[in-house]
Length: 300
View 1 (cartoon, rainbow, N blue to C red):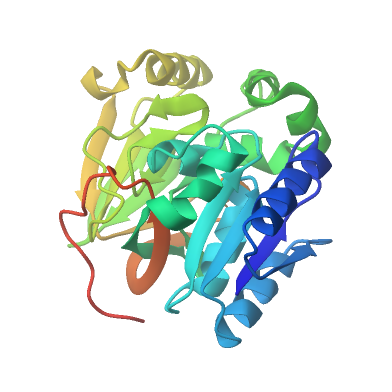
View 2: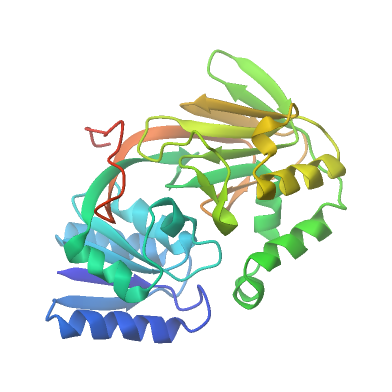
């Protein structure tokens, strides 16, 4: 049985995309059901129900936020996740080299392979790809789905340009061993990619047991602007004002209110503790996707 979970507000023309999914599965006589989310958290419950009912696969039609909820619901189960991207950043699709078309993604149900990756946590919320604290997360907090649907990535740029004029809080990052680092912004990446197909962590390993921490050490709004520009140009890793550190955990706090986001969705205010868990997510990827270097073996 295949469960299809889709978010009708994840992007424009969602109905057209779900119609193509329905036509594809019907044309191949595959047993399936389609369920539509109506509020935040719906996809977690639907995915968990699908796993408990023994569904072989859950097909997600939506953005990275919907994917995050489904992944949270499937973590630790035998049910596989397949993704048909229909969001703004679509980092998941780029991280796992998924095809551009609906039909190409669904072809992976038969032609792809299944790998297991560990999920990370921000406090009690699981995530797959990346998270952040400080400026980046505050921009996400101020975004609305209508803005993202109309403008795409440009919505983040415009919102970020407005927000950079505000006073920016200082973050304190605490690594294992009680090492403390003062920073202006922090991004936690399980893989390599960021929104807009940007490589944020060249050394990221989505199937590994750690994550990459990318932190801006220099203070000031113009430092943030340069940091963002360097990321887009792929030059941030060479900056002496940027720290890139591999770690299995990280604690972030701020003396004044600031925010945290996971997989492109606002999580809540700081403080936040990031960790890599033993909870496995089974993901359908192209057959030529590189095999995990550090395959996880245990379930949470």
